[in-house]
Every structure is written in structure tokens, then in C-alpha cells.
Length: 128
Image (cartoon, rainbow, N blue to C red):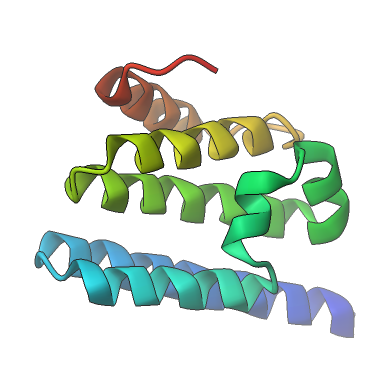
């Protein structure tokens, strides 16, 4: 019970950080948005660079929980948005690919993930 509460708290903190990052992005404050995303990754207990480097199965084992895995995908998609808004298409594509890889590890892909992955894929012109 305690472990589940801890996980849900971490996911909630990451979700709040992501929401803050997206608001800051809309306000054209990319540095603050970047910091908020970093706080989201920290709440999950994962380094964002690992999300970009490690294979999806290893990350699934490291995150250990479907909600944390799902939140990591959301953070990566948010970061892809931030990079794209900053004109960094290559960095955005890298995060999109990591999100797409990681989303394949989810038991069920939420509809909003499918839509966001497809939208970013079109904008970036990337393949899986």
C-alpha cells in the first residue's frame, strides 16, 4: 500500500511539472519550461538522458510501474513539443522516437498518446 501511494505521488508530481512546463511554453518561457520538465523527470526518479539512450524494455524494468512508464512518455512528448517550438527539430525527433519506443511497452496505449504521437510524427516528418 505504501509503495503504491509513493508511486502515485511521484506520478502526480510529474504531471504537475508537465502541466507547468506546457503553460510556460505557451507563455514563451522555454528556459522555465525546460526546468519544469526536469522536475517532472526527477519526480519519477529517472534521468531524461537514460530515456533517450536505453532500450524500452530496460526502461520498463527500471520504471517498474505502468503509471510511471505512461508519465515518462508524456514528459518525452512534452519535451518534444518544447524542442520543436524552439526550432530544434532534430532534438524533438529524438524525443518523439524515445516516446514512441517507450509507448510500445504500455499494456494499453491511451487515445491521447496515439493522437499526440501521430500529430508530432506529421510535424516532424519522422518514421518509427
